[in-house]
Image (tube, rainbow, N blue to C red; front, side, top):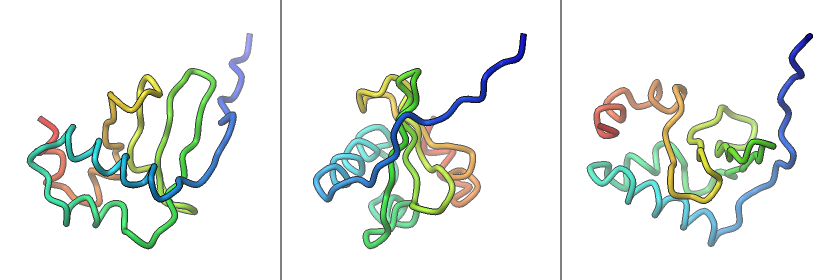
Length: 97
């Protein structure tokens, strides 16, 4: 009758190699974005966390901050910016199209 609240199965920090892979995937997915744009959203010295949900969605964000990107299938191929990401850099939404 009542819908259960969705909670993350795991939440962990990304390693250096995974961080580089995430940035490379975002750059491939959004080719018109510059490295400076991606560094503004995911700063090099900040800790990036990934939350894995039971429905295979992965949510990437800054530790203690808002989510910035989400991966629909959990394989790293379908990564999209969140609303918070688009609010931080308004022109970033135009790059997604």
